[in-house]
Image (cartoon, rainbow, N blue to C red; front, side, top):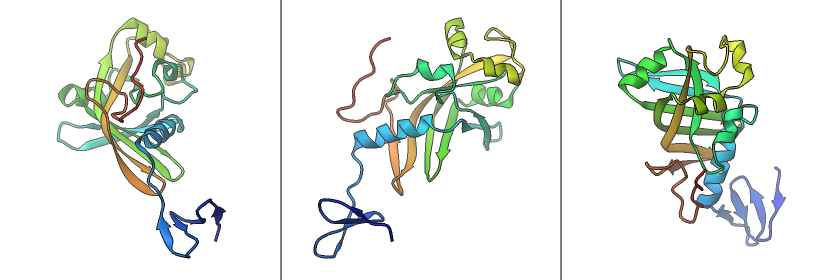
Length: 193
């Protein structure tokens, strides 16, 4: 069994073995730590599972590039406390039909033993400035000619709530409806850009 020294005793799994030999419960993460870890988790995987609801009310999930990953230019558009994300898709995909009828969308980020599920709203972004900022030359491998390609559609996902499997526990996350910064007491507010 792997044990790590702590000031109060020994850590065993999720509990702390105190000097009396009793296993004490580990302290849950603070809200600030939890949301910071969730944001870090969101940036890790190169791929993300994206879900929409089809015409019959069934979830449709597909793998897409994680534009929050540092390999993509879109990662620079979003602040450190912003859980929103972008995705690019072809103008003829079913997900656009799904979002037109029901804007609910989910994104699931998985690495190792941690998984982050975010649920919220997806919308098509049409402004040229954002399309160019999101554009990445790797999209040419998907058949797009450039950021003004009419087949390229940029989606913005804004989460309202989520679940984060962190430190072997599932934690619920909530976000204000008017902004995408975490609803954590004492969290810094997004600065105007």
